[in-house]
Image (tube, rainbow, N blue to C red; front, side):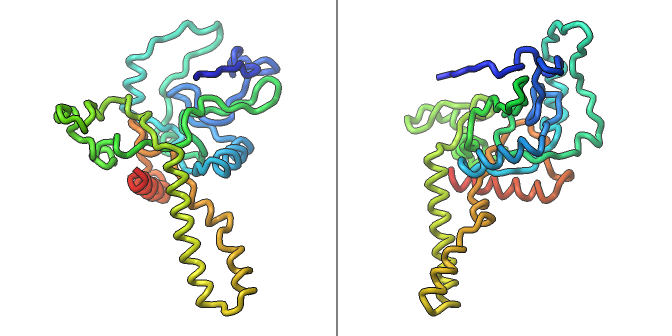
Length: 259
């Protein structure tokens, strides 16, 4: 089912400004636009998607697409007729701007806007889990289980697919699987901590007090998952933010383990 509502000001566009248009707070409308990350909107997303849906906050390139992908879009896009006084956004980001990063919680294609009624709206939140690594080739970081599947499709257990097709970018992990994985991970974590507490505290009262502190907010945050793994044409974080690049590698390993 596709449900659609008209957010106040969305039809007038951001360029209208004033009381009629909307204002982009989160994400990006066009490929050439940098990702926006308003602090207040991010706090809402971290609370709603992070706390309730286990979506992790992660560092992303402010200009997320690779230069090659941006050039391809620039060469192949159909130039629309723009209203008088409004210029089409060009691929004019400087080298330094392309190294900037933002923090984001949610799928990269999601957008957050401030409507003309001064309320905040979320658009295009089409997924809350990451890609299924089984549908990603080993060359691109996936499990590689379906590599060569198109050549072996005569076997009934092998689907007739070409993993290079962008269609498989929407082959996602089921939310039930992510929840089950999280519960298993949390159970193991609690067991390890309980064993540590038993070794340090002999009386039951101390045990109970220590047990209540086992799953703190910081520890629970480790059960949140990156939904922007294995995305095609993404600008690499290596050389831009070493910590973010290291975190992405860990997130992709977790995604492979879940798959």
